Image (tube, rainbow, N blue to C red; front, top):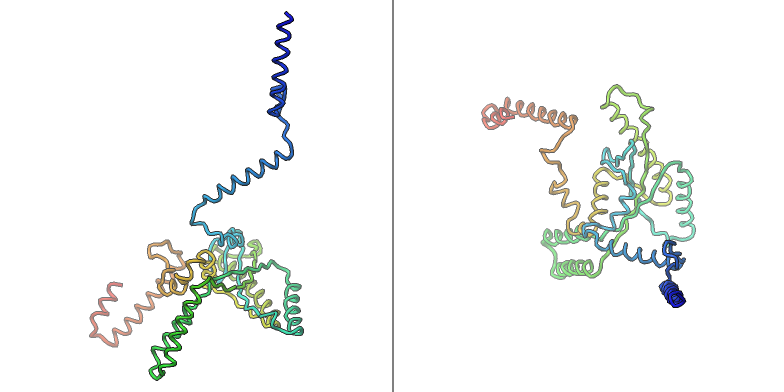
Length: 317
């Protein structure tokens, strides 16, 4: 009996020593106490795992587009030189031409500071500032030099050679290292309260909402232009085309240098498909233009009755 107790005591002592070495609770049904340093270690390990997961994201995701998405997370579309958002909230964007502040003397700097501070102090509404970095595009300047060299026949050999060398240097300068230019914008936001608007039908209500939003946002841009004009900062409202161009450069920053927005616009790649769903207002406008065209063609046909091709065209319409 004594041997059994001694053997049991030795086994129990070995079990306690083992649990202590592996830093586990001696009583199995008790939870393990986690030390603070182990918690921080687990957090670091989780962060490393998350970073590894993030590296496997889709290559189509562009990091530079995220800030613009944060500015307009609830965008619906572009209407009347404005960005329309949910709950009848609209945003209008104005581009600001900057001044070289550090090349001015102290008096001129004080004028710029006063103009900007006065405008900020007079703001009682939501205003945001957006800065966009674009790759420098010298294609227009290069094309202008080429057109000049081709159109001018009286250029001497030295002037023509100088122009050709300038084109080569501009191309080399642009391809050597990435060059950027900063564009500065002010975003004005306004929400239309539908309860304050009285309208007979939905179409009238929609037009009233757009008119009210445009008038209010345009008034704010005009106020900013007047305040900043004294500091030689020019403020220009972006049209619908300018807003689309801004979005194009925000989401196609690297490709915009090769596939320029102006080329896309000139090739009419932004136009709607003819099979796309159209609003009743657009259909009515198209019908009105067709009726005007038919009337003009009828008047032309009456003045020139021998033209059979025009008559067949009118019958087909």
